[in-house]
Amino acid sequence: MAELDLNEVPKSWLPYAVMALPLLVLLGLVLGFSIHNSERLALTVENGQVFVEKGIFFPWGSSTYTPHAAFEAVTIPDELELELPTGECEQLVDCERRFYHAILAIAAALLERRAPKDLERLRELLVRAQLFPSIGLGERAPIEDLTGAIHYIEALMLLDEVQVQLELSRKKLLRSRISGVAGIDTLTLDALIDMIEKQLTAIQSIRPSLTPLSPAPTTPNDAAEPVEPLDPI
Image (cartoon, rainbow, N blue to C red):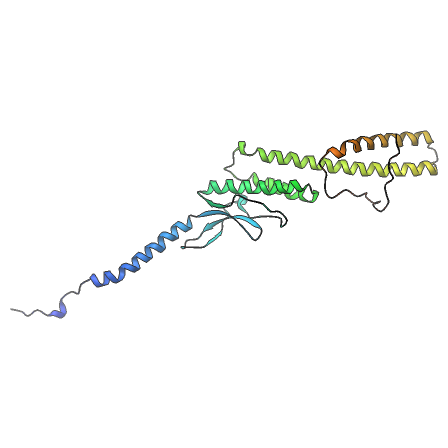
């Protein structure tokens, strides 16, 4: 009968399995957390910008997520203090809606300042707000409202410019009447002055009831000269 060589008996795999089990569990946890983190989306405000961040394939960490132009980061003016709908998003559509309403909030805050220098920025924000594909027509009414408000502010700016130009024209006509103009009788000059004064009176009577603008307009090419008060009509 052949003798059994103990050196040839297969060694048990159990010790190796026991040692490998914690590593497999750890690897599984890392993989699971990485998958979960990679699916995370959130609207975030950081360094004066609002943007969407997406988790990377790692248990923690994220990066800016820009699947299309609508998701590019939006800068918030330093002087604005806003409560934006930031936070975790259940899915991409939720992030689109959050970002959409954040952009509208920034636009509304800029509009409230009534500063002409903000108009171009306002237009850019409204164009951006229209790029989100999941926002239906029924949710786009605020864009129309803000667009109408921009036109209103521009109209007031033009009205202020007209007033400045009319005041300058009246001043020059009064000087012409004093100095005299060859070929132009005083009745014609008086008629022109009377017409301009009526237009100025009409503008001045309604202007206080309109939303004020900032900054106030200045007289072009004649800003240093004081504007004479209107004579009673």
